[in-house]
Image 1 (cartoon, rainbow, N blue to C red):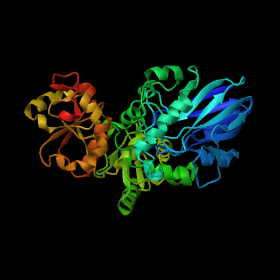
Image 2 (cartoon, helix red, strand yellow):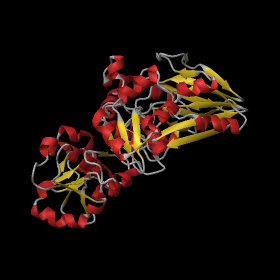
Image 3 (tube, rainbow, N blue to C red):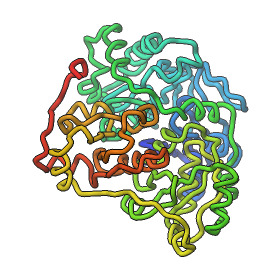
Image 4 (spheres, rainbow, N blue to C red):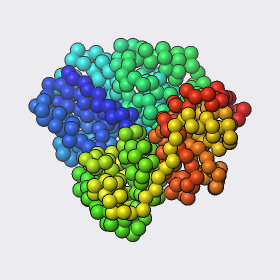
Length: 469
């Protein structure tokens, strides 16, 4: 028996490849499925099952394409209602895979179709659970994402989740391995650990939601407390996972079009496409196409694209480092952004060579902010999450989380200089690009963000209770 976790850091997502005696099950595959097929072929094995833990909201799964290419059935748990052929498993239904067995355990709560897959080894012993978004390491799945489609409140879903955890998962042996669908950085939970694999016994000790003396009402209150608004693209990804989507190769064929600077400019004007610059923050600061939006590939690219671009159907034109065009389009497709019209041939250098209009972002080191702080402390804007801000922040700095920046434009000064920072410099450059596209050119970005600021003598405020601010 072979169990492999294939972890994608950008999405903080885990796919699982299970192989036994020439047969393979793939759990929650990414949209680009060729690696799974190649792995099975190399091992002389055949993909027998494609198991989905639930209808994912944060990424487009590869279940449909993988089934079309291999003939393997797609398996969902009870209550699933996909608009394509799939096997809807009964609670505790078993699937033989080579010399092992996988049991579908219905664990509603995150969504009503959520299912945990229990792997029984060659001796019939409980070996591992693949928990999807039901149980994370250090956390559990948020119960507010499915309420619109199920007509249930988040509190009602949390009650289902409480029962699922205690009656279906916590009764399993402590030495069972826990393989979740996500880790730290995913918007599907709020308190996930950095680790991506653990034993169930340890989770019973360290996971706040698995306390043995926890009442159902305590669970509901704690699990629903402090949930931030989910990204706007989540319901659209659920729809794609339920209804279907085009193969990722089609997306690549349409998006991998090299455009001259002139053609790029014409298409941008004719289609109102978003010009998405995916280079490094410092490169964007030195020069970029006016009104382009920065979201760098070398960061949490796909989730921030989904957060900041509301409509997954909106046309996109890419400014991308040479050689990374396919990577950018593939990673966009993972969160359902399939309408890439092409990329700037030769990268931003070709735009410069044509002598076309450019813009820049003033970016200064944290040490230079010390002088500005004493002159005008009220001109500093912190675009980190509220939880980060509350843990420690510059005194008098405003908190305008990046995800909500479009709702707070009126708070930024129209004419006076102001300063923008995040934790490390990635999100603040996204914020700067959006603000400049909205006509705010009187801003200065702080390089390396709060990590650098914390080392200066700028006055700071430690943890502040939300009720006091």
